[in-house]
Image (tube, rainbow, N blue to C red):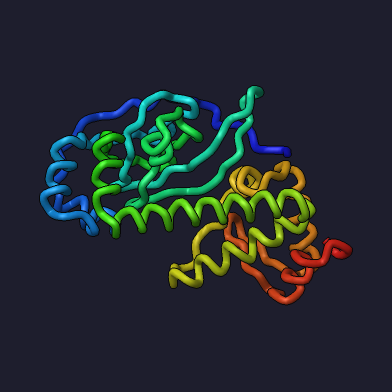
Length: 248
């Protein structure tokens, strides 16, 4: 699988401590913590230092032995893995309210992926053992975590299926359709499409291939490009290209 080049700078997870968090803020930050009893939340908060992480620094790195569960309070980060050659593949983007790092807390293993700050981030680092004990003691919180893990597995299965059965052109078309739907569902204003490097890393395609497909789609009038803004002009045709291997 061809992936994108890694960011030029790999900073360690340099962080600056900030004000401590409260149990109430935990509940407001993520639905998971709202399912816990207030005294349990307060106890977790007392054990969970908060810190800021600058752009380009890692919140956690693949294989690291630490087992803290991180709650993003502000900012966005990219979940990714690096190859031995320094190329990377991006799995997802996480933002405020998301919880990452729970796998290490559950099975005691090393980090399964790296998480890189793409904007300045504020995180609360919850000790893995305390997090796991709190979740297991609450049926509602345990169910929430099971649902999160199930979504992760489904997403992984879908990604494997796409990489196995879809051509590079189909994956590019599908990415554009999914991006448009994501923006529409959140009623977000028109915003730049991810860069070609980011698109390539997320769908497991060489950036040159993505650029070539975008050029073709533009020439055929299926999409319109204005800088980083991409507008779909012929959704039906794009859907056909995404699903028909003979056309893609």
